[in-house]
Length: 410
Image 1: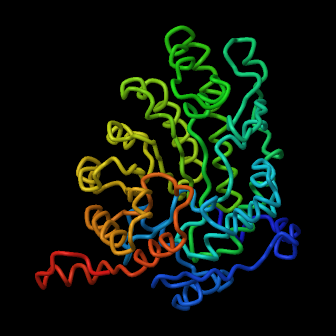
Image 2 (image 1 turned 90 degrees about the vertical axis):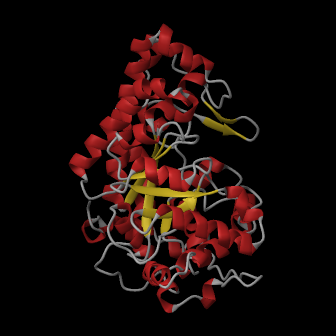
Image 3 (image 1 turned 90 degrees about the horizontal axis):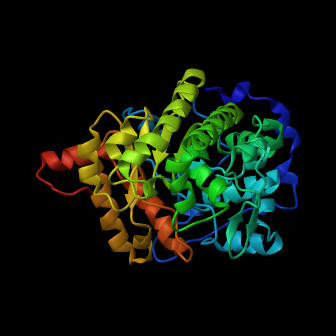
């Protein structure tokens, strides 16, 4: 992985801090959860001098010793935050918000400014790279993503071309700025969609509840589908490497709709292509941790481990203790508090976090939700989630157990 000092200084010309888009955040949390102003000095400034050591999240992803579980949330930047909703009123187009460097950076940093998570994920979308390899798309308010020319024939495949990373410069520039802003205080996270998941949109023409067209293609046009998946695999691998070279510490692969396949079908139609991405990225960026997440992955855990990724994300339907037992201690895990838990009273949230952390063990665990933050989630609950995570000390846990204390102390 390239260090930030080796990254091109072209990002300095973007000048996002001087943009009229940027408004410093001074978000205060009520109900007993600490605000960003009340946190200890090491969480105060995003501009503090970077440590020579890797961020806590990167260490945990590699299974290295850490004193507490690092924490971040899927969809931690988004509509549950008032500051995001205000910005979205001014810039109503999601494509504009996710494809304009100034806006990407500002939105990505909103939860960092408010909550100081251990991971700052770029505000983007798994479909963002599609136009760069020949698949234009729109996002409609009601229907969501819409692909006017789905790929369902050999003739349709001719529209595809190698990924043009110059068309994704806004992603690279944003990651460079985020790396500079966050330094080594938190991991900068990039992400991509897995080939199967991206293919579901391209074949179905957008969102679907049945996946019947692409599932049928597995049997009626397997050669065509393999050609599409192979093309996506090469493009996505190049896109991952581009994100790492632009400043991402860690990359999450979302096979969001892999769970729509029966496990034996996932072995055939998703896993080989994820395997190839992992091999390609590990060859070029061997120190960059890769996380794999599937929504509804209880039947896939052992198969997911076989891809060679560093971290398996568990959704909330998997018991953390069972997931750890099934995966073993030689791979890191991420998750998996139920997103709906954040609508509970703060003591209940604390207890659930304790249960998850205790079940995961002290080695190789990244605290997260089992899916993305839900719209309407109280911001004080999100702040509390991170406050509780920061309050843990694995050394204290060992001492407490030696003294006969059965529970983690937070």
